[in-house]
Image: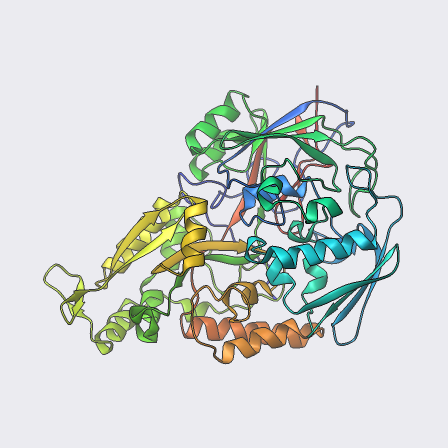
Amino acid sequence: MRTRTPLLAVPALLALFTAAACGGGGDEPGSAAGDGTPVRGGDLRFAISVDSGCIDPQQVGNNDALNVGRQLVDSLTVQSPEDGSIQPWLAQSWEVSPDATTFTFRLRPGATFSDGTPVDAAAVKANLDGIVALGAKASLGSTYLAGYAGTTTPDAQTAVVAFERPSAQFLQATSTMSLGLVSTSTTTADPAARCDGSALVGSGPFTVGSYTKDSEVVLERRTGYDWGPTGSKHTGEAYLDTITYQVVPESSVRTGSLVSQQIDATAGIASQDLPQFDGNGFWTQRRANPGIPYNFFPNESRPLFSDERVRRALSAAIDREQLAAILNPGDVAVTSALSASTPSAPDDADLLAHDPDAAAQLLDEAGWVPGADGIRTRDGQRLTFTVTFWQPVSAVLELVQQQLREVGVDLQLKQATVAETNAVQESGDYDVLFYNLTRSDPDVLRTVFAQSARNVTQRPRGPVDDALDQQAATLDAAQRSQLVAQASQQLLQEAHSIPLVELSTVIAAREEVHDLQFEGSSRLWFYDAWIQA
């Protein structure tokens, strides 16, 4: 497994591609402003870039929404941001069967949901059953529960979760907010009411105060909370009275708002603006996001992308070193189907080398010949396709657009809303999708690519599915790493995965903000955060 954690930055983007760590930052998890004695109270104003229209962590998939949801729900386990180990939270201990089909959790006593009902084995069962019932609405959790056979409750504090087939990834999945626990009543509530917060009752240190779509989310400190995860810096209730997430789509406005102290912190400062927060009354902290890097996902059910030669040509035409050098000089390029900070991520840089000559030859072999305007044609059709995306990432995609044009490919860009992009993916009516997926477990490859899960490229079953399924069933770390490496190599060799750039998250905050931290998947944790008066 590689130990480096590369960072890629794109001007005018969110924290999606934010710059290298600035004053007091670095790559270590935690807050760069951690000195002083914590004080209770205050409202932390945090700017996010997009509102997905839902704050239920079991139903959302983008980082801004998950950063909100993390504060509302606790999880059975917590993943250490330092070493990736799985540690106790709502479950004080657990056992995994040798074949990874049965997981027995023993719950800590005394934890409750904000409606006063207990976090007990029956609630665990209701949550897992409910996520399965949500189906596609639980876009991440449903894939983590593939093969779920049910949960039994021998007693009030013991939940036994069973799978029809081995699921080695499940223990890490229990640390995610996508499997975070909500009250039993919430599990059967209308999904829309859960999304808008009116029927969302969690187990976490904050509760929903108000949610105004496309404007703000206000969370309030929960009275009596006293079961923070292993690794927390304090016990008892959160320090902050409230967290106000303000939806600020424009990067320049987020920068100006932080400078003028209209907000206290954000993870959405464009790379070229970060230097002004290097000291000067501010601090920044950066952490590489594990999981799937930003990818082109070609729809292989369409004739153009069913041709492996075309897919491989697109990958070979992309100069990832140029992307990294131009977007953030001195950084490194993506080198795998997984981000380098993901456990067991291999190094497949040789499969992602920039080779425009090879790209041209592959397109020639596929019958696409240069046209009068430089764009290739075949049987009177131009070699053109559209990539659909919701993130404000025009800068990086415009650079890729230029690189592909050099080999005769006309790339068209279509920016949509989160909801529109999700609908397009569900319908299957797209040429290419562009997104990433953060998770600190290599099983994220199965979530995105496997036929048994999302199968975003809509490809027929192949040998890579065997490797993806086998790694999900393997507890031996060395053997699992080999299967992950095999799957990554196959995805890249056949260009099912066309990775472009990796994601890092950078917090930029006023120096009065302390202990705003990253959790194991580089999302944000506000439980220990406090504001100096």
